[in-house]
Image (cartoon, rainbow, N blue to C red):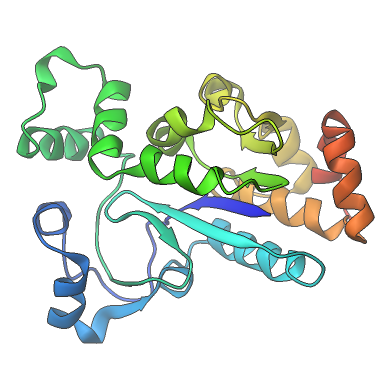
Length: 237
């Protein structure tokens, strides 16, 4: 099983580097330069959505083998245990993305905002790495990404292997970017039902889904009847 989630703006340490340094230097070099601001990807991010996803991964691991990949706008696709220095970099601020694209010598004047995000994502090997990971033949994949991060990953999400059942928690506006995933709505209706905020909705839905899974058999049923999975994401225990 595979869980794919985004980085978060809030981090364990104050940022010591920004996009320009991230894009021009090796991660290992940055780790040595800033040893006091280093943590694993799982520990670095401290946003509420991330915390919900971490709890979901821990609970899933009690009855399934779970891989967790975190998409970082700065460092690309990260295994949860990979160490990174604290940084400031996001796909959500389009001017920052544009400046990165310019430094990467991309033709920014011909690109829409979404194309800029996709192009920078390509430069960070996000869809390429995800395609390779998805090619391992997971039974189930859960994708909890916001719009810009879905766009960065979209090329991989449109080529999910036939043997894999993938679910994406996404708003109506983001549905067009989820590729071959089954859509788990993350809309005002779900936010209201769960009594949560927009910032943590996708993570809360995944955690709620996991809390309603009681056994390996439930996971098999999700593969057999993916459309029947939606209600489990808002069914409070």
